[in-house]
Image (cartoon, rainbow, N blue to C red; front, side, top):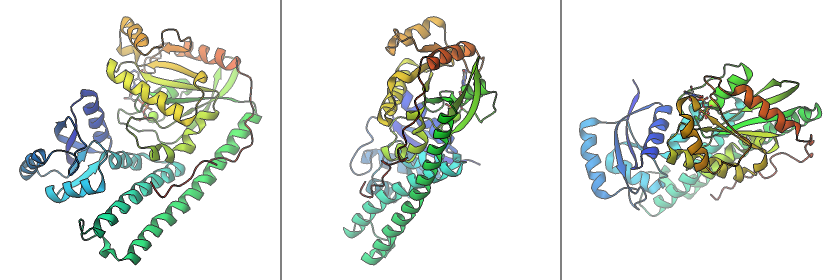
Length: 375
Ligand SMILES: Nc1nc2c(ncn2[C@@H]2O[C@H](COP(=O)(O)OP(=O)(O)OP(=O)(O)O)[C@@H](O)[C@H]2O)c(=O)[nH]1
Ligand SMILES: [Mg+2]
């Protein structure tokens, strides 16, 4: 049986929907949703009255976990857990759990491990601080020696993983160089989680990679060769984006996402069946993440997926709303019904043919990939 969860989230419908999908993806069954305007109250994240109410609810329902759809400081987590005598999981650890379940390749496993250690490190610091103030007893006996041992242990594990990730990054750079030398142009799929990247990847390549309504199904990159009339190109599927994702998680996946910087075309997959508000929020989040990664905006092709679920007029309206009306590199498709897939291939071909081959400069990979122990 699935673990039973109470979800504490915001009042907005799109946020509730995404939070539920995250819980579902991590394998929890939410039997009660508590919606709040604010989740940033100092002591518990929510108001004390609400905590009392939940306390009553817990007595009769005995959930396995309470999921809090926002970042919780360790002190807030501790306050909630000790008051409610139930496991508390915040948004970050929820996403980490999904990552952990879904990581299959050795590189994505390392990336997830790195993100987990960063989470542990930032929380350990706060726990130690609280313990010193006598506010959170029982954390490791709390002698200075033990604390140092504990921190050093996390640091050492991070350093070991980092060096493996750097190695994997170098390997990736070598692959990139060899495919550049062979003259292959490359296409990468990007987009919000569950937009349909893998479904489109499968439609373009004839593969059968896992597609799923759950979030973050894909965590590692798969690359295949496809033929666009006369030329062969390489296409890659990769990890999806989500809003309110802490920077260190993007950082952890940086070497995978770095592919988006070097690729010739980025297909930004957009789920056009999303309600307008959600659509815009996800779109902004994707553009923001691409910008943060340093992806050249000129090489983005906007693919409006799931258009089988939307009327033509509505698609036009939404294009307008996203400010893409004048954009020539835009196409509505359906990865499921294959509508407009061949037109998409034509568009890709035209775009790729207009681009000169640029051989990647030989720079050391992941030079900016640093571990900051202080955050
Ligand atoms: N109706 C419809 N559903 C689609 C379409 N494309 C994808 N889907 C569905 O959307 C869900 C998510 O699809 P995926 O291809 O797994 O999405 P993704 O972007 O790879 O997601 P992550 O790997 O989790 O980031 C699946 O249930 C798909 O069947 C489409 O064109 N039309
Ligand atoms: Mg996928």
